[in-house]
Amino acid sequence: MILEVSSNLNDSQDVCCDAEEKEKMLHTCKMSSSAYKLSVAPEMDILEYSKKEWRGNTPVAKSMRKGYEAVARKFASIRQVRGDNYCALRATLFQALSQATQLPRWLQSEDFTMLPENLLSKYDWIKQWQLKEKPSRKTGEISDEIKEYLLLLKKKWKCVSDIKCPVEKQEACDELLKNEEEEYRLHEALKFLMLNTAIELYNDEKNRRRVPIFSLLLFACDTSISPCQLMHNHLNQIGHSGGLEQVEMFLLAYALQYTIQVYRLYKFSTDELITFHPSNPEEDWPVVTLITEDDRHYNILVRTCQETML
Image 1: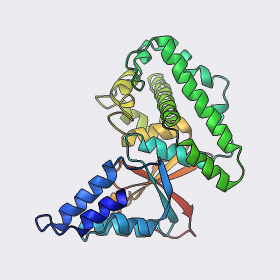
Image 2: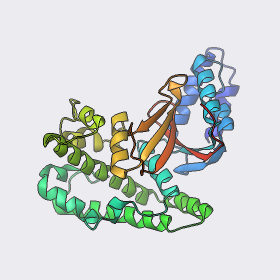
Image 3: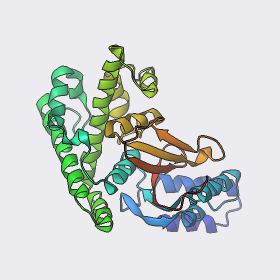
Image 4: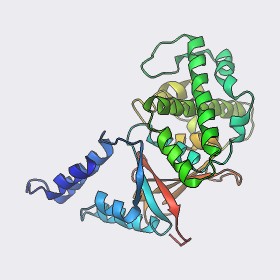
């Protein structure tokens, strides 16, 4: 479906639409299309992908193609991620699971599944957590439902990490994201872990403990001066009416204890082409690698090539 849309736009003879407008229309169709049948598409050669998606001769198209050419010196393939408001969570989770060999320490904790109950006992406002198509829920029901999401995340993570064959592991990850309802629950579990991390960081700062810089920036925003506001104005919106902001990518990285490396193509030819979340990652944190053209939609980079200078 997407290929057909691209072809139709490219072959159009409408003289009233100049090349730049056509390119903008093509990119908009690509980003907003609901035609994806898979949450994560099969691998595609990066240069082929670049030529398909950026066919125009405008400055933006030329810059994007150069950016992809640079990335292709480090990675061979790209996997396109379904473009909804969960895409950052989906891309990060898929990458983390596809290379998982064991459960992270935080998933092994005995208190992990008690997290919703423990937090709700301290923070009554968490009962306003927004669940899909269930805007009003009782506190106990919310706790039980989120607990199910966390248990599902732990179960799936263990199943995938126990698979030794790389091919079978990838197939398991592909299969995992074919169940829409289960995928939704996994993403909501990640969001709840982000809330828990935000509460911890907020309390640390209030108790004058050292916190990462992004945490200070996060709670300096007018719409997130506290974890409660962060939940209402940001976390509750992710997946529904909005995606992850840049500062929330840092929060996701801390929640998972993974370094999220992102190639930001609109920053090509600058020192900000590659961004790390967190900026100074822990040495023992695994690394997942994503790519974005605009800091809104994220795809996955796979198959590392021989190390070269970007």
